[in-house]
Length: 122
Image (cartoon, rainbow, N blue to C red; front, side):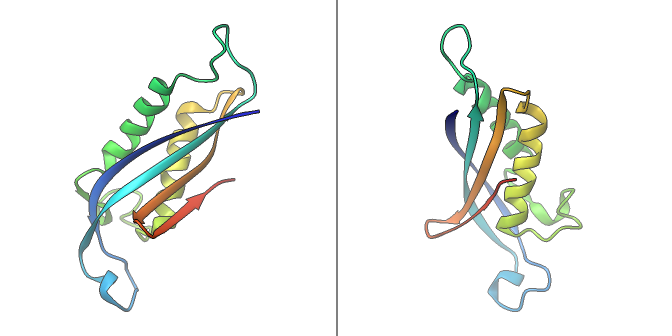
């Protein structure tokens, strides 16, 4: 089994519903996103999956979130915009695009700051 990782990011604003503290107010983050995929077999040129493809799919998914107020975007118009839910959203979207029997999204980690992150994996 091989594991490949790419890192991307996006900037957005949000506020946490039902939270008692500063994060209930509108604020922003420069989110860092790690995408980890696993691959069982290498292709004819000994590549698991082209990094170019991973980066393009990740850019498409985070592009939807970039420079937006997350609380207005589906599914975050009904889900709280926690780092946990954002990691799960990115994981699910990338899984739809990449999982093909050989390639599988293994984990997505979302950093809201240098010191705080949340990850989702199945």
